Length: 373
Image (cartoon, rainbow, N blue to C red):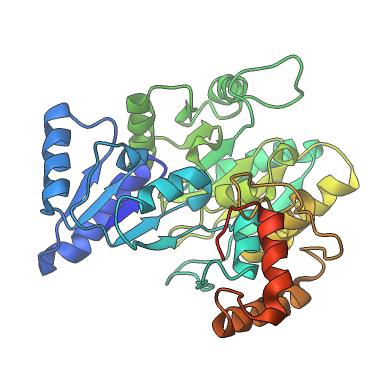
């Protein structure tokens, strides 16, 4: 069995969780990530190939050609939106007839479309874990800056921690948006000088990022300023505030993922979306985030705004070429079509009956040999 996660931090967290549950049953779990010591990595690779490791938990490292499984039967991809279509295909090809489970807090539009077409069975966890509370979300303009900062101070004085997410690493004269380094200097030296402020972004070395995240998790940092590098792989139950600068520059799925970094403990948590602009589109997107924590509602809105992507390709956005149907507006009809298609395949899987001959020819012409009938 293989579990693939997008970051070393998340993979390590999964290893700790799975090992704690499964070791007492004699089930062995091991980690496979890029920044392992060469000697340890060689040992793990050999034991994977020999079948001595029951569950391999890792990052993109699992996709490498030198990772060979003795009898891979199940692949779980966590935060599946962070992996490309071909990457998810590659891991599945490391075994024969491999069962696949993909997990995400926010199904991307492509996934929603595939569900409608019956390519995936879906299970929905729509309840919060025990002792967790709903995250309150507020969208605010520039005039609320001082009030937001005071609220952050109150929360930190109560022992909580805060994330501040920015769209840029450094200032850019061509883009009117907040940067990590700009906010860090201001917060550390002025606004929050009495607290421990640190920053993290994707251009930093992995070792430095891991160290900062561990310090934040240990409570040694009060305010962490970051890019979307902390979108996944972070579990800090004590963090109760997520402030997103220039929220209008992020997609709905990303906003939802970032919001999910807080509310992971027993404390009441908040997500504050600081946005600029007064367009109807921006207001509508902020309204969606304030009104729902439901990932499927958010993904449907994302689908409406962005499109669903190709079904037999690798592009994950763009409206499919339907001549009549609208994938967002006609979901009920499409679900009915799905059930009829399933019935048709059950009765004539190869579409060889005379009444299905034209359909067979149309599929072959439409998809140009990408699927076989």
